[in-house]
Every structure is written in structure tokens, then in C-alpha cells.
Amino acid sequence: MTIETGRAWPTLSSAAMLAAGFIAGPTGASAQEPFKIGSLSDMSGIVVDLSGPGTVVAMQLAAEDFGGKVLGRPIQILSADHLNKPDVGIAAARKWYDEGVSAIFDVGITSVALGVQQLTRDKNKIAIYLSSASSDLTGKACSPFGIHWTYNNYSQALGVTKYYLDAGKKNWYFMTVDYAYGHNVQRDTTGMVEAGQGKIIGSARHAFDNKDFSSDLLKAQGSGANVIALATTTGHVASIVKQADEFGIRPKQEMAALSLTLHDVKGMGLQTAQGLVVTAPFYWDQSEETRAFAQRYKARFGKMPNMVQASAYGAVMHYLKAVQAVGADDTAKVAAKMKDTPINDFMTRNGRIREDGRVIRDMYVFRVKAPSASKSEWDLYELVSTIPGEEAFQKADAAACPLVKG
Image (cartoon, rainbow, N blue to C red; front, side):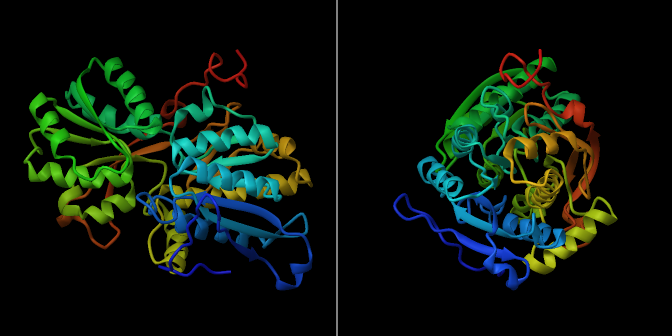
């Protein structure tokens, strides 16, 4: 199976959920019952470039490299668009689990992820969160069968926050998207700022579908804050930064993009994005291994992979290896095997899955290059520092998650 670059992706409605199924493996195995896994994500909306069809491509590459079969059954990858609506996403996940899907990957938006997390407990099924960021998934909403794979809002904000605090930028103002993810980012980043002797001097919230940020930006500018912290989605960040430049906010005030990704930077262009700081567990040009995967991916999809899309490959491979090792589609045994097995692939060295489901891996702080420093279309970042995995994520919280031993 191949994914067609740039094709229109089906959408879901509450009444009629559309899922596209693809079989990776010999066509002669079609008579066997397929082993189903699914990618539930934003396939057409504001954060489509964060994961979307690109994540499905990475999952397909993993299935192909695994050999197309597991437990002697052809691997079938389903995909569906939750439209960033909890009712649509949770209904799609429930339908998949009821129809025999063994694991759901990706998910994204917090309100959908928290609903899917509850389903993993109710349905005794696995979910592996790639583009979901809420740290609550391994806190008060933890599940024995939910694995928070790629990053979380704490780890993504940590490098950026530390970078500006170390530069003496102590007064902060938040622009926050008004739903669970934004609230979590502001909460966790506030803790980092205050721990670094900084101060929050104001904040403003905006709706998820907001496109005009001029009023909030003027408030932030008037606050005199050293740093305007963007506790919002990747899609919103690009719009806010562009509008901030229209008001001449930079360089007098710094813009701390707490959720910026590779494709946001690419879309903004280096002229606008230069100097912004990004924290991520992956960049395509880090090593020979990352470059080799990135070139394979780009040949298939037409773009370089970001951290979520790259992590989809490793997540699927780790999951399939656990299924094969257990020798059965047994949720509890597979989850335990995944947690017992170190994670080693092109983007992670000696990673591990904690008892609360949090994957512990190194995170990297990057600065966006100036146009004059970029040598090619996707040459966008320069490495600033590395945050060891044990420092990059909050400690497991026994008070919040009953899976954690006190």
C-alpha cells in the first residue's frame, strides 16, 4: 500500500464515520483475519500538518519494514478524521475497538485523547498517543493501556522556558487557547517560570477557532512583559507570530512558542520564524539514521517528517514487536512487554515506558535559523542544547496516577 501525496482525505460526521483501510502485506493473505490498528487524528483541520496523513505514511513504513504481518495475520492500518470534535473522535474510537481494532495511535486534541483514554480502560484496548500533549494522560487520567509516546506539554515547553529564563527574561504574559490543552500548558509553564524566579504578569485566552489575535497582542504588548508565552496549538502560533510582527512586538518582547513544530516553521518561512526556540525529541537532520529515515519518508510523502510523524514509525514497530514476542493479541501482556522493553530506534536511544505510560526520552532545544544560514529547503534548525530524558518530563505522580508505586 502507498499513500497518495496531497490527496483529499475523508472526513467524519457523527452519523457517518468514514475510515480508510489499507493492508500491508501479501494480497494472498486477504483470506486471513487482518490485525487492525488505527490512526485517529486531525486529517483535514488546523493541525493536520502536525500528524494527519503524514502519520499514516510513517505507520505504513513501519508495517512494511516489520514484514506486513504479525501473528501470521496481515497488518491493516485504518485512518479516520475526528475533526477536532470529542463526540466524533470518541465515537470513532469506540466503533474501532468494538470492531476488533487492537490499538489506536496518534489521537491529538486533548478532549478526544482523554475520552479515548477512558475507552482503553472500558474496552481493555491499547492507545498510543503521538500528537496528544496533555500531561494529564499520565497523571490523573492515566490508564494501564494508555502510552504517551512522543512528548507532552511539559517537555515541549521546558526547553523554551529555560532558554528565556536563563537569558534573564523574568516577566511573562500568556496567550492561551481556551480548552484543556492550553490550560495544561499555562499551568505547567507557570510552574517552571515561578521555579526560575520569574513572574506571570498577565494572560489572555482565545477560542480554538479564533484567527484575529490583535486585541490579545495589544494587551500583551501593553503589559511590558519580557516574554509573551504562546500556550496554544501549533496552527495558532504561526498566525500569532505573524500578527505580532505587524505590531512591531519583536524584538522588544520575545515570543515563546511553547508548541512550535517543523511544519509550522516551514509554513511561516525563516524570515518570520528566525530566532524562535523549539523543543522537540526529533529533527530530521540530527544523524545519519534520522536523515536516512527522513529521505525514505520524503520520497513517499513529499515532505520531511516532523517529530510526531517520525515517532509514529518507532511506536508502531515497538508495539508490533511486543505483540510478536507475546505471541497473542493480549492487551495486558502486550502493554507489559512494551514497558519491559527499552526503546531504541533512529530517534530514541535507551528510552523507556514508565509505569504511568510516559515514554522517557531525551528532548532537544533548537533555534530556528536565519535565512542566510539555511543551506536547503528543509535546513531550518540549529541545535542549542539537549535535555536528558529524566529531566525532560515531570516525575511520576503517585498521588495522581494509581499505577505509580508510592
